[in-house]
Image (tube, rainbow, N blue to C red):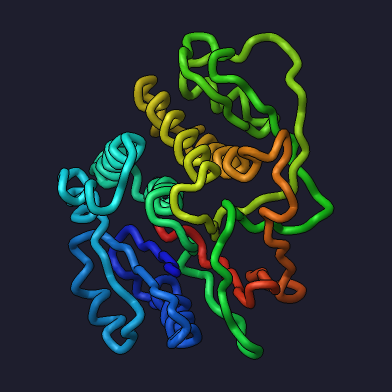
Length: 308
């Protein structure tokens, strides 16, 4: 079973932000058959290989070289089996190229990482974790093999309202399937794509406050595909409307990743994400900058965006 970490940028001065948690997890799960992949830009592979040299269960991979190899026919034949893989590789390559362009603010690399996490969930499977997610000390540690697409929820009391919208209902859109968007942000997200919401009342679905700093999925799950497709289709719409960068764009991206993940969580489960697809999180203490996923013995520490 595989665990993925990603850092898109130069190694920071404070190494607790990029390698501390992955190192601790590598030590904690040694001998359990868990393989950790640390993904970074090609230019920094050698640096991170030195950082993880003492951890034999960690493999450092370059994102650009991986995507480049994934366009080769022999590579696709060996690893992937459907046309959707080619589509996903092309979409992810476009997003990464945009994120690394000199005209794109560096802080936007956090949104590239969101897309990369969804890409890994579909094409690879296992767990994807922000660099601030690591093991809690004490007790027996193990990560179960994911059976469905999953995400954390901060609590079981607060909730978000989501609209489920058929793509064909969006003016100017000829696609199939559906998307889910936070009710309060649906208009701004669609505006960023130059699509218009029809003047009608949608059935609102209530969901728990989901987070995206850790996801899990079996390889090729339909839930992971639904999440990845929504994110990439909307990104392409924003690109065509020239709205990928701007004052309102960061907020649109934040709502887009949450809506995309919810679309994956609820896919195939009627109109609501089942509780079995959510990990309940608890605060690590009053005033703490971290939360615990007690069931998995993991802790998320908030360090701020890795893109800064």
